[in-house]
Length: 87
Image 1 (cartoon, helix red, strand yellow):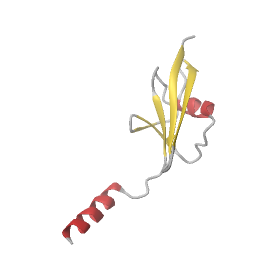
Image 2 (tube, rainbow, N blue to C red):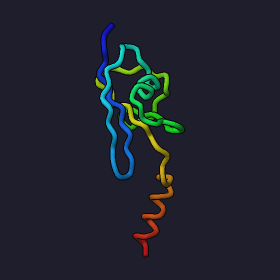
Image 3 (spheres, one colour):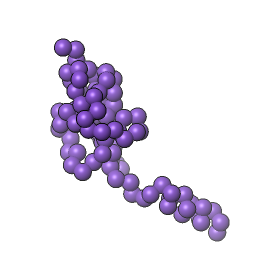
Image 4 (cartoon, rainbow, N blue to C red):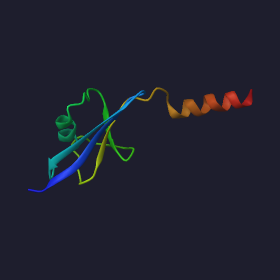
């Protein structure tokens, strides 16, 4: 069976953890996250900045991102910036 090269990335405010893996072809996002050893409790997953399901099958060279909750809703952040500019 072919082996895929996959990276699992967890970006925190002060640092970024990157775990390179070799997985069996047909492995899912959830299997990649489980194999990396990083804590993924209550996190969502993404590839290329787009959210994906845990059961989605990985392709060679994928970079699986552990997505943390947003600190502020993007629409609310735009409103706050606009208010500051008007002052």
